[in-house]
Amino acid sequence: MFSNDFKEDLKRYPKRAFLKEQSVWSIALYRLARSVNQRGESLLNSLFNIVYWPLFRLVETITGVSLPKDAQIGPGLRIWHFGNIFVNSKSIIGENCTLRQGVTIGNRHEDGPAPVIGNNVNFGAYAQVLGNIKIGNNVNIGAMSVVLIDVPDNSTVAGVPAKIVKSVSNPA
Image 1 (cartoon, helix red, strand yellow):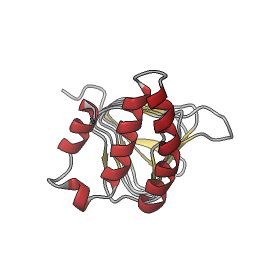
Image 2 (cartoon, one colour):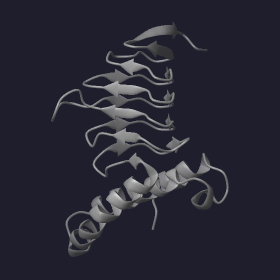
Image 3 (tube, one colour):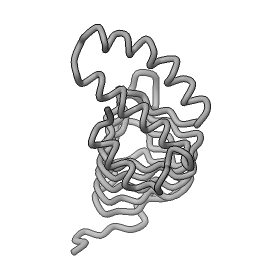
């Protein structure tokens, strides 16, 4: 029923995560909706979408995590300290990323482009990543940072607006 991506997500959680971590509920619904949508147009898909939207709003309200099915999120997503997390439906997030409470990944204006996030990106609490930007692989985003610029691989950014505070050009 669930995709391999969800199995990769669960590897980053403790055992019995459904009982301990409300963020898993949001991820499970997201992965299920993506799985159904990838099967193409069908009567089952149409019926699922009728049920999906009220269920999405319910889970979003209970957990404070908004992961719309149109966002592209790689396997291994981990959400620590759920609540007040918003991911724009146009966002692309790579593998093994970590979100903490209050993170927003979104656009800067209505219908504007959303960020593209690389693999192994670690978001500090209340970090905001906004607009048509690219975040590289192995990036750390400091708590409460507002990222409005592209960030290269192997960097750490912090501040308002965020600036690169550490960059490793060759991490070997």
